[in-house]
Each structure stands twice: as structure tokens, then as C-alpha cells.
Length: 128
Image 1 (tube, one colour):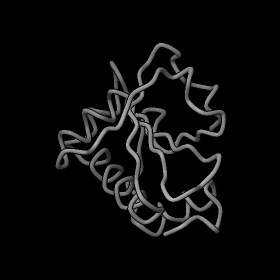
Image 2 (cartoon, rainbow, N blue to C red):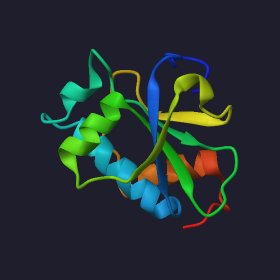
Image 3 (cartoon, rainbow, N blue to C red):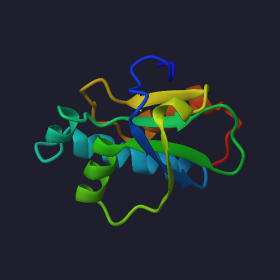
Image 4 (cartoon, rainbow, N blue to C red):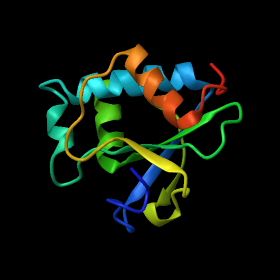
């Protein structure tokens, strides 16, 4: 999904930077499984359904993942502290950002499915 559709321009997104596609896939796969579980489903509904975006413009040595408040709350509920390196309003998300989890639902993905989805957006040359 293009970043211009579905983004509440006043909503804040929290940046979590991962080194490589494998670390990114592990985090997103684990979060998707949590959000699909009875404990995590509440984070997919109002008032702030979880959204997870990636910046797919250019892959360097890291992957930028953006969590809205709902996704950040789910992450903090399910996992050890995640190093948030900054925050920005939705209007500032990069033009090449892609929504991976959102729209009020999250299928539970395994590593292979998540890596495939990341590869579609980051390209096959993206580091592991």
C-alpha cells in the first residue's frame, strides 16, 4: 500500500532500525503472530489499530521499520524493550514506505513468508 493511503497525517510513527532483512523479518513475523493471537487481537482494533511500515526506498545496511502507537503498544506488551530511535508524524513517512501490517487485521506470518514479503519491497539484493 502506498503511504499516502490510510495514513492519518497527525499520527505519530516510531522508528525502529534493524540491521539486515533477517532481523527485520524475525521481528515482523513475531509481531504478526502476536497480533493474530487472542492476547494481541485487541491491538488491531480501535482506537489505534496497529500499523507496521517499512521504508522500501533504498536498502543500505539496515531496514527502517515504523510503528504507530498501536503497534508500539503491542510490541511493548509482547517483547523485551525495542530500541525506538525516533518518532515522526505520518506526513513525513518516506514516499517509498510500504504498509506491511495494518488495515485492522494481521495474518500470522512465519519467517519464510515475512522474508518473501520483505524481498518484494526491498529487492533480492537486500542484505541478510
